[in-house]
Image 1 (tube, rainbow, N blue to C red):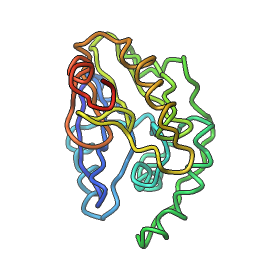
Image 2 (cartoon, rainbow, N blue to C red):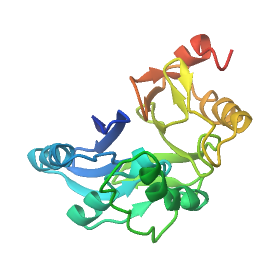
Image 3 (tube, rainbow, N blue to C red):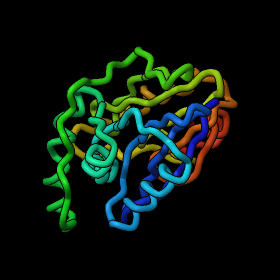
Length: 213
Protein backbone atom coordinates (compact mmCIF):
# COMPACT_ATOMS: atom_id res chain seq x y z
CA UNK A 1 0.00 0.00 0.00
CA UNK A 2 1.48 3.31 -1.13
CA UNK A 3 1.34 6.53 0.85
CA UNK A 4 2.41 9.89 -0.55
CA UNK A 5 3.66 12.96 1.31
CA UNK A 6 3.86 16.25 -0.59
CA UNK A 7 6.12 19.18 0.21
CA UNK A 8 6.02 22.53 -1.61
CA UNK A 9 9.55 23.88 -1.88
CA UNK A 10 11.63 26.78 -3.22
CA UNK A 11 10.60 30.07 -4.85
CA UNK A 12 9.29 27.97 -7.75
CA UNK A 13 6.66 26.35 -5.49
CA UNK A 14 7.68 22.89 -6.69
CA UNK A 15 6.03 19.74 -5.38
CA UNK A 16 8.43 17.22 -3.88
CA UNK A 17 7.01 13.78 -3.10
CA UNK A 18 7.99 11.04 -0.69
CA UNK A 19 6.42 7.77 -1.78
CA UNK A 20 6.48 5.11 0.91
CA UNK A 21 4.85 1.84 1.89
CA UNK A 22 3.94 -0.25 4.92
CA UNK A 23 7.47 -1.65 5.04
CA UNK A 24 8.75 1.89 5.69
CA UNK A 25 10.71 1.93 2.44
CA UNK A 26 10.61 5.15 0.45
CA UNK A 27 11.34 6.83 -2.86
CA UNK A 28 12.07 10.56 -3.00
CA UNK A 29 10.71 12.06 -6.23
CA UNK A 30 11.94 15.43 -7.54
CA UNK A 31 13.54 16.89 -4.40
CA UNK A 32 13.12 20.64 -4.79
CA UNK A 33 14.33 21.56 -1.31
CA UNK A 34 16.57 24.62 -1.56
CA UNK A 35 16.53 26.49 1.75
CA UNK A 36 18.02 24.80 4.81
CA UNK A 37 14.63 24.70 6.55
CA UNK A 38 13.18 22.90 3.54
CA UNK A 39 15.91 20.29 3.70
CA UNK A 40 15.29 19.87 7.40
CA UNK A 41 11.54 19.48 6.83
CA UNK A 42 12.18 16.65 4.37
CA UNK A 43 14.68 14.99 6.67
CA UNK A 44 12.45 15.38 9.72
CA UNK A 45 9.50 13.66 8.03
CA UNK A 46 11.67 10.75 6.92
CA UNK A 47 13.08 10.36 10.43
CA UNK A 48 9.74 10.72 12.21
CA UNK A 49 8.11 8.12 9.97
CA UNK A 50 11.10 5.80 10.32
CA UNK A 51 11.56 5.53 6.57
CA UNK A 52 14.46 4.03 4.64
CA UNK A 53 15.12 5.91 1.41
CA UNK A 54 15.72 3.36 -1.34
CA UNK A 55 15.73 5.57 -4.44
CA UNK A 56 15.91 9.14 -5.71
CA UNK A 57 13.90 9.62 -8.89
CA UNK A 58 13.79 12.70 -11.11
CA UNK A 59 10.81 12.80 -13.47
CA UNK A 60 12.91 15.36 -15.33
CA UNK A 61 15.90 17.51 -14.49
CA UNK A 62 14.86 21.13 -14.57
CA UNK A 63 16.46 23.25 -11.87
CA UNK A 64 13.46 23.38 -9.53
CA UNK A 65 13.17 19.58 -9.47
CA UNK A 66 16.83 18.88 -8.65
CA UNK A 67 17.66 21.55 -6.06
CA UNK A 68 17.78 18.85 -3.36
CA UNK A 69 19.46 16.05 -5.30
CA UNK A 70 22.84 16.55 -3.64
CA UNK A 71 21.27 16.79 -0.19
CA UNK A 72 19.22 13.60 -0.61
CA UNK A 73 22.15 11.70 -2.11
CA UNK A 74 24.50 12.70 0.68
CA UNK A 75 21.94 12.10 3.42
CA UNK A 76 20.71 8.67 2.29
CA UNK A 77 23.51 7.24 0.15
CA UNK A 78 21.47 6.97 -3.03
CA UNK A 79 22.17 8.27 -6.52
CA UNK A 80 19.67 10.01 -8.80
CA UNK A 81 17.89 8.09 -11.52
CA UNK A 82 16.34 9.74 -14.58
CA UNK A 83 15.99 9.28 -18.34
CA UNK A 84 19.15 9.53 -20.43
CA UNK A 85 17.56 12.11 -22.74
CA UNK A 86 17.35 14.50 -19.81
CA UNK A 87 21.09 14.51 -19.18
CA UNK A 88 21.48 17.80 -21.10
CA UNK A 89 18.71 19.27 -18.91
CA UNK A 90 20.62 18.23 -15.80
CA UNK A 91 23.79 19.81 -17.13
CA UNK A 92 21.85 23.06 -17.69
CA UNK A 93 20.70 23.25 -14.06
CA UNK A 94 23.69 25.19 -12.63
CA UNK A 95 23.58 27.54 -15.62
CA UNK A 96 19.88 28.10 -15.03
CA UNK A 97 20.54 28.82 -11.35
CA UNK A 98 23.03 31.51 -12.34
CA UNK A 99 20.60 32.98 -14.89
CA UNK A 100 17.84 33.18 -12.26
CA UNK A 101 20.25 34.73 -9.76
CA UNK A 102 19.92 31.82 -7.34
CA UNK A 103 23.09 31.44 -5.23
CA UNK A 104 24.49 28.31 -3.65
CA UNK A 105 23.14 25.74 -6.11
CA UNK A 106 24.59 22.31 -5.32
CA UNK A 107 25.19 20.27 -8.45
CA UNK A 108 23.58 16.86 -8.54
CA UNK A 109 25.70 13.72 -8.36
CA UNK A 110 25.90 11.86 -11.64
CA UNK A 111 23.35 9.26 -12.59
CA UNK A 112 24.81 5.73 -12.62
CA UNK A 113 21.77 3.99 -14.05
CA UNK A 114 19.32 5.67 -16.39
CA UNK A 115 15.61 4.97 -16.24
CA UNK A 116 13.96 3.55 -19.34
CA UNK A 117 10.42 4.05 -20.55
CA UNK A 118 8.09 1.04 -20.61
CA UNK A 119 9.83 -0.53 -17.64
CA UNK A 120 8.68 -1.02 -14.06
CA UNK A 121 10.03 0.75 -10.99
CA UNK A 122 9.48 -1.36 -7.88
CA UNK A 123 9.25 -0.50 -4.20
CA UNK A 124 8.88 -3.93 -2.64
CA UNK A 125 5.57 -5.29 -4.02
CA UNK A 126 4.41 -1.86 -5.22
CA UNK A 127 5.08 -1.09 -8.87
CA UNK A 128 5.19 2.01 -11.04
CA UNK A 129 5.09 1.82 -14.81
CA UNK A 130 7.43 4.38 -16.36
CA UNK A 131 5.81 6.20 -19.27
CA UNK A 132 7.74 8.49 -21.61
CA UNK A 133 6.16 11.96 -21.87
CA UNK A 134 8.47 14.41 -23.66
CA UNK A 135 7.45 17.95 -24.48
CA UNK A 136 8.14 19.89 -21.29
CA UNK A 137 11.58 18.27 -21.09
CA UNK A 138 13.13 15.87 -23.62
CA UNK A 139 13.50 12.97 -21.19
CA UNK A 140 10.40 13.43 -19.04
CA UNK A 141 8.96 10.31 -17.41
CA UNK A 142 5.78 9.84 -15.42
CA UNK A 143 5.23 7.14 -12.81
CA UNK A 144 1.95 5.22 -13.04
CA UNK A 145 0.70 2.93 -10.28
CA UNK A 146 -2.19 0.88 -11.62
CA UNK A 147 -3.24 -0.87 -8.41
CA UNK A 148 -4.04 2.40 -6.60
CA UNK A 149 -4.75 4.39 -9.76
CA UNK A 150 -2.29 7.19 -9.23
CA UNK A 151 0.22 9.09 -11.34
CA UNK A 152 3.28 11.05 -10.26
CA UNK A 153 3.41 13.28 -13.28
CA UNK A 154 6.09 15.93 -12.90
CA UNK A 155 5.46 18.93 -15.14
CA UNK A 156 3.43 17.25 -17.88
CA UNK A 157 -0.15 17.81 -16.74
CA UNK A 158 -1.44 20.30 -14.16
CA UNK A 159 -4.94 21.04 -12.92
CA UNK A 160 -6.48 22.93 -15.87
CA UNK A 161 -3.04 23.51 -17.38
CA UNK A 162 0.03 21.85 -18.88
CA UNK A 163 3.79 22.19 -18.56
CA UNK A 164 5.53 25.08 -20.27
CA UNK A 165 7.30 24.27 -23.54
CA UNK A 166 9.43 27.38 -24.08
CA UNK A 167 12.50 26.06 -22.26
CA UNK A 168 15.40 24.31 -24.09
CA UNK A 169 14.27 20.90 -25.29
CA UNK A 170 10.58 21.79 -25.02
CA UNK A 171 8.04 21.12 -27.75
CA UNK A 172 4.37 22.00 -27.48
CA UNK A 173 3.00 19.42 -29.90
CA UNK A 174 5.12 16.68 -28.33
CA UNK A 175 3.67 17.55 -24.93
CA UNK A 176 0.07 17.45 -26.20
CA UNK A 177 0.77 14.11 -27.92
CA UNK A 178 2.36 12.75 -24.74
CA UNK A 179 -0.63 13.67 -22.61
CA UNK A 180 -3.15 12.21 -25.01
CA UNK A 181 -1.26 8.98 -25.68
CA UNK A 182 0.28 8.30 -22.26
CA UNK A 183 -2.09 9.87 -19.72
CA UNK A 184 -5.50 10.19 -21.33
CA UNK A 185 -5.41 6.46 -22.07
CA UNK A 186 -5.73 5.88 -18.31
CA UNK A 187 -9.17 5.67 -16.73
CA UNK A 188 -10.83 8.88 -15.53
CA UNK A 189 -10.41 8.04 -11.84
CA UNK A 190 -6.60 8.06 -11.88
CA UNK A 191 -5.32 10.70 -9.45
CA UNK A 192 -2.47 12.85 -10.77
CA UNK A 193 0.16 14.29 -8.43
CA UNK A 194 1.65 17.16 -10.43
CA UNK A 195 4.99 18.93 -10.14
CA UNK A 196 3.28 22.21 -9.23
CA UNK A 197 -0.12 23.04 -7.82
CA UNK A 198 -2.90 20.76 -6.56
CA UNK A 199 -3.72 17.20 -7.48
CA UNK A 200 -6.13 16.50 -10.31
CA UNK A 201 -7.72 13.54 -12.07
CA UNK A 202 -7.53 12.29 -15.61
CA UNK A 203 -11.29 12.67 -15.97
CA UNK A 204 -11.27 16.29 -14.79
CA UNK A 205 -8.55 17.22 -17.28
CA UNK A 206 -10.29 15.46 -20.17
CA UNK A 207 -13.36 17.59 -19.51
CA UNK A 208 -11.90 20.88 -18.34
CA UNK A 209 -8.33 21.43 -19.46
CA UNK A 210 -8.40 24.36 -21.95
CA UNK A 211 -5.13 23.25 -23.57
CA UNK A 212 -6.52 19.82 -24.44
CA UNK A 213 -10.06 20.57 -25.58
